[in-house]
Structure formats: structure tokens, C-alpha cells
Image (tube, rainbow, N blue to C red; front, side, top):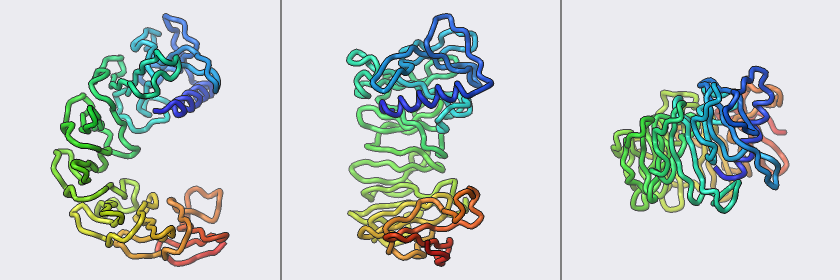
Length: 330
């Protein structure tokens, strides 16, 4: 978490605490400038206000229980809860039961220390007990939103692996890079090539690509649809399935998902179009920009009873239905 994200997070947290009519703050044994409401697990973040060029903020942070007893000392750079615990949490990726903590050397700067250069990461439970002690790993990465959040990606000496919510190593730290698990699979790299492995560390898609990642996730329209991946060979991308079969040729400069659909934006030479999950081109590659979510002609209609693919060319907007039929020009 960089310094700007931290500041914005603290502002949003403070505003949410103030706006909550049901807020009950603990009476702490030690006086703090900043005390949050007790969350659903009976704990709250606390801190003292420091002055910065952007205003006054609580930093560093600690934890107290409902009785006001300190369960984590006030010397953490960040303390992140699962969203299930907190009415004001901005995170929905942590497993229920764990807190991600980061500690920073603050010798050079009372607010930001060494700006992440010597951060120490750990996992803590709601009693303040360390599940993964600080400093074992150089980084503990939170899962992506909507990803499989029972495994954490961990980094040590530039090698990546995975641990479970008990801190046990599930996949050894043997990869040069790793993303987060989604639907039981994850993109990893070794010896400058990317492939896909499962939770048993078995290779599902061989290590033969310059890059590969999962494109359609649990938000796609058809959850029975075979998983599709964006793979790169040399400078070109293709869609492939989990059997390593190509859905398209390696012919695109870019491929990205239109969220909540089985449609994909593809690009060639600074122009974009849309293909479906069979690789069929349904919107020609003629447009400057295509939205990555479906749109509606009614700006106040958030349920999108009529959803359109919105494409832009010069000063005009073209609306296509999900089959690629042109419905409207604005």
C-alpha cells in the first residue's frame, strides 16, 4: 500500500466512522487521538494524529478489543480487516478470521518511513495473535476481489509461493512471479515463461508463454462456460482454453474482458473491436475505444434492462447489442 492509498483509506475510514449512527467506541486504557468504532469482531483500530502536508491523520495504527485493552501495539503502517468484520472496510479480499498487518521502519520519516523499502508483513487473528510472524516473508499479497481467498501469495527473496489461512506452505516458494488463485487455478512464471498451475502445484497449461492469465471469472454470464485465458507469444495475444487449445489465432495486440459477460475487447494497431467466447468477431476492429462494462441509454438505470456494447469513434458513439447488431448511433 503506497502513501497516497494509505491517506485516502484513513480519510474514508474516519468519515465512515463519523457517519455511522451505531458507532460504539471502546474506552481505551491509553488515550488516543483516533479511535474507531468496535467492529463485528469486537476490535477497533486506534492511533495518534500526525501532521502531514496533506492534513492530519492517525498514524501509525494499533488494535484494541471491546474493553479497550491493547491487543496490537500502535506501531503498524497498516492494519487491514476482512470486509465481513467492518461496516467501513474497503477490502473484500481477506478471508474471514485474518488481519493483514504491515510494519515499517519509521526512523527516516515519522509518517512514511522508508516508503515500503523495509516493510514487514504478517497475519494476525482477532485476538492479536500472530499467525504468520512479521518478517518471515518479504510480502504477503491479498487475493484479488472475487478470487479464491483461502490462499495467500507470499514472496521471499524474489521467489513466490502460497500459504493457507493457518500460515502453512501449500505451494513452495519456487516461482519467479505468481498472481492470486481464481477458480482453483493461478498464473505463475519460471525461467521467463508463464503457465497455469492448480492448488496441488500440478501444471494445467504448460510453461511456454510470455504471459498468461485468466480472463473470465465467476462474474461471467455462464458459469458453466469453459475457463478462457489470455496468452501471449512474442508480441501477440490469443484466447486459449484450459486444455491449451487456441480459441483465436495469436493475432491481437490486446485482449481484455467486458465485465460480467463472455465478450472480449480485442485490439490491433490502435483500433479495437469485440469477439465472443468462440473467437467470433462481433464488433469490427474499427473503433478508438470500447467500454469494458455494458452500458444503457438511460444514465439513471443501473440494472441495464437493455445492455449495449458502447464503442467510440471520433465524435460519435455506437451502441451494439450483445450479438454485435448495431442498435443506435449517438
